[in-house]
Image (cartoon, rainbow, N blue to C red; front, side, top):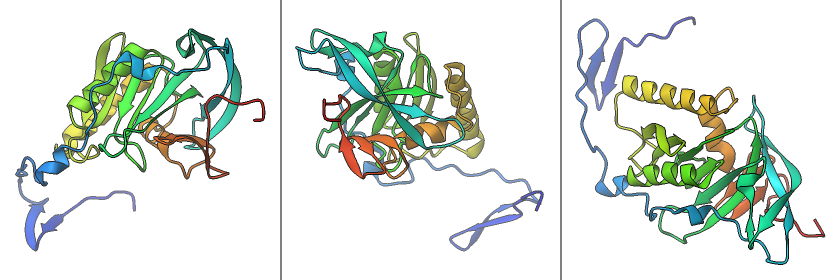
Length: 249
């Protein structure tokens, strides 16, 4: 099959589309129950929400790092020593980005932080509630301000994917239905996806499918190191592991 052309579409037994005649789709707003549009039960974040606390006695800490690989949703785990100051990990001064996830259903308030590198953002930030399979709020970035801006835009819109750089929103796909669906027509959503994809690539994301790569960073059945609101997940061993490594690790 070289082409896929739809001739007719039926919904609930009625013909709603036919390619042989002009057709204007009737777009209904809010086709779902009201609570579907109120799934992000998370207060707006501050820059402090992207701090990583370390023991005061440690000037530096050996950390686990998620490595993103172009061509795959698999990641790898590497380790590096990151400097600290005043009990906080100085990740913004490191070569690595921050990845953070926040439980957004109002169930337990869990949150987790990690470090990330590889074929991913090199600057700016991106936030999304389209993050398999838990679809919590996932944020990746290289500075706290852009991460806060992207995250809060997603929170205000009750879900979506937002990219920010230099204190400004570059691109946004609103996903107000459960934080994962749009009710806009396909031609509008496709343009939003293309615009966001271009924005992420302009910030250094090198993956062949940047949205899929981003959304699977929280997929804890896909090797090797991922993140959920319970923390970093060593997928192959099926257990949570700490960001900051101990002498026994």
